[in-house]
Amino acid sequence: MADKTPILVVASGDSRPSANCRCWPAQQALEETVQTALDGLGHETRRAHAPDRDAGHGFIDSQARGLEVFRQIDPQASIIVATAVWQYTSHILAGLIRHRGPILTLANWSGEWPGLVGLLNLNGSLTKAGVPYSTIWSENFQDDFARRGLTEWLTRGHITHDVSHARPLDRHQWPMEFQEFEARGHAVGSHLRADQALLGVFDEGCMGMFNAIIPDHLLHRLGLFKERLSQSALYAAMRDVDNLTARTHYHWLLERGMQFRFGQDPAQHLTEDQVLEGLKMYDAAALLAARFGCSAIGIQYQQGLKDLCVASDLAEGLLNNPERPPVVGDDGHLVFEGQAIPHFNEVDECAGVDALLTNRVWMELGFDPSTTLHDIRWGETIRTHGIDEFVWVFEISGAAPASHFIDGYAGAVGERQPPMYFPRGGSTLKGISKPGELVWSRIYVERDALHMDIGRGGVVRLPDKETERRWSLTTPQWPIMHAVLYGVDRDQLMAKHQSNHIQVAYAPDALHARRALVMKSAMAQELGLQVNLCGDLDDVLSRHQDTKFQQ
Image 1 (cartoon, rainbow, N blue to C red):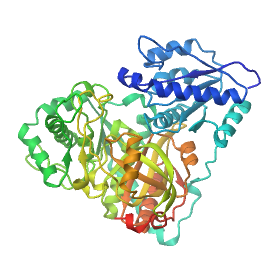
Image 2 (image 1 turned 30 degrees about the vertical axis):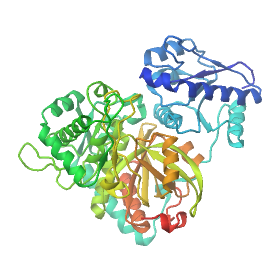
Image 3 (image 1 turned 120 degrees about the vertical axis):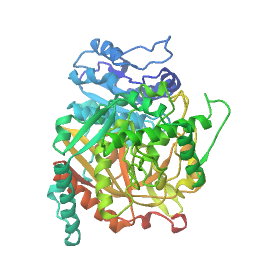
Image 4 (image 1 turned 120 degrees about the horizontal axis):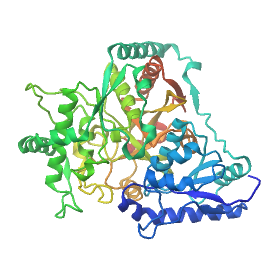
């Protein structure tokens, strides 16, 4: 950028006024920090859209507003999309698709609202749309990593990150002892493509997540098809679930030790009625999955249903667990008896396909198939109790099964969803993920093709005080996972990962985790996905964790 024309700053926000107003101070702080950093590098910034005093914030809060803003922007201008909060990519996607100048997406390194989650969703959406962009993240943009990145963007119009941790599977040769599992993975993939399966989609496009929608023609190549369902049908089915059934599910949870933290004011606190309504949703979702023959389902919830009923999080976590309250079908028999019903939170169809592949592979291996996506929320380096690693905070409002938690249901707590996002409340399924070996992955769309990044990792158990500190810096009502990704550092994951979501599943130990990774990557390859192996595939959790904190 030879000239010193002010760089335009764009800020996409939520569609919910309550969230935009609450999070606006964090956005202002980020923009001031970025301006200070660029001042030091000899460049100025200017907002492309003025704050709205009547609205009480300065976010673009709808697609229509985004169109208005970008009509006034020179298509050749340099743009920064500054992200301190969760944002709806759809608000600005139309403008960015036709923009021709350099685009930089950036976020503050903070778990508060959370900007990192919004940044990764934006990046994954731009990748799917084929829009060139650069990206950077930092606490204050004064560190060497951020300053080098900003300088490169200012001088060359792009930033180059180290993504050497990702290697194409088709160039990899597995050792002899794993080739059996490679062959089994190809066989499971071939069977799915021949047998075909349905993904139940209760309205797609949740929260502007363009990257979460898989075009039908890409799904069909896998033998997968969308059963397009309506959230109104789910709500109607909830009304057909009687109170006795919901209360039976409730007592099933209480008998297994789950606790609920109740209060008196339903606008601020969790109530028993909210829990029972959430259990009606669970029953109705399981019944609809059975009626339509779906192998996995996704509930959007945050559009439409949030104004009608409680949040879907308790229902989602129960569905993802083979051990769950029994649901009686229309014929009087239990539906999906002894099985998980893979649920993809926020109708993230990429996560839905990933969950289905995980379910098939883990079942073939005889492992617990409980799986969930998490938000890549934030993280810090931990140097205590035998740990000397960057430890991520993975959190998601829904879908996390109690089988992932320390002590299972007995270690699970239901708390009210934050009123800022969830006006009618509803119970979360909160817990601390147990120590153990993981396989992580992400399916995404790039250049009109499906890709998968897959690697290994582990969950460490931190002292309770540290867990509480991390919850206080993020969302304390949600389940938490303290994750280490083997051979993938913070900046490599942020540079390469094409989503706000990451899929995780446990394996019994390191050897079985590697076998599962081999088999799942082979299944994906058989289905035609372009697979990248990420990080160190041979690492084990034991070197990351003092044994006194392991389960």
